[in-house]
Image 1 (spheres, rainbow, N blue to C red):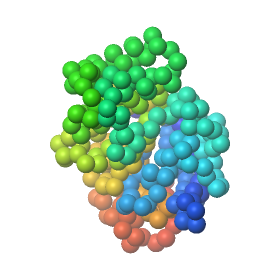
Image 2: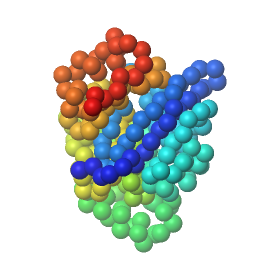
Image 3: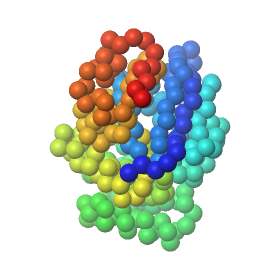
Image 4: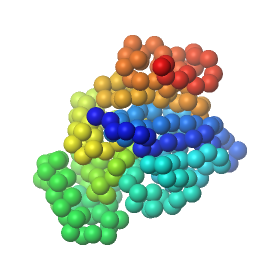
Length: 251
């Protein structure tokens, strides 16, 4: 169930790689407790958007606020301390470290070893397979198990906002379903807000509160997931059949 007010707001964000514009005035809103999904093809700017929110990229123009606080110029570690956790595309776990060591590394940001140990215990209970494999090198885990570890690593800082970049990448359909069910359970039980990037809208429909379609660095569509069930509006925005410019949610 969503709370009141916007947890995250991105206003007119512009990000470039040299002369190449990756985001061209992107604005999104994520309310407390929502699951908001950003859908779009490769090169749409989805990962750039998350990196800019997390402080990994600087915007030329625009503003990012978290709980009303402007974090546009904040360092990544400071943004993380404010409650933002990013699960990057491809998971990027430390393959030579054990499962437990991967979680401990994430816990160092907290600076409270006793609380970190308590949260790690919760994660092991949430994902029993990680508990069973706590002494395994993370590189030996299956793709689905590595995604669990990446999400568990995000939880170690007890964030209020978890951003997940392409959670289905490289996973079998059955495992993707499990990953999304896991994320939804975390949202419900831990009260976190979710922002998820995906190429495909097929699975996000089941869990998303709202959907943005991003293409060419622009928001092409923004509407409640319930209004997009037939997939036609998403298809038009995704493949460029819609008119240029953002199509906003209907009142």
